[in-house]
Length: 68
Image 1 (cartoon, one colour):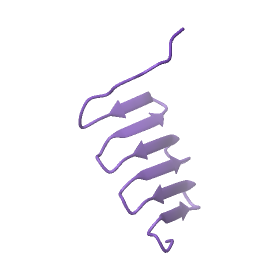
Image 2 (cartoon, rainbow, N blue to C red):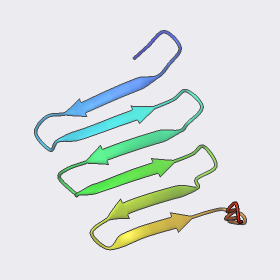
Image 3 (tube, rainbow, N blue to C red):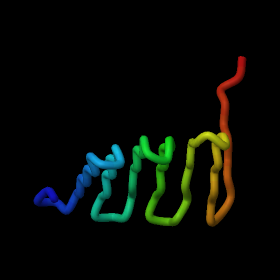
């Protein structure tokens, strides 16, 4: 863990890398489950795995794109 509270956890047996901030944000790279998960402190998350991409939000989801 860093002085500021950032945690890096490595699981060599399952090929998992987990980064966690003191504010509760998390990035999980999991070769064992073949997934990538991004989660914020508000419990919003994006999961990419063999089932596709799942986006979950405790509130609204807004997508924006710059058009021509």
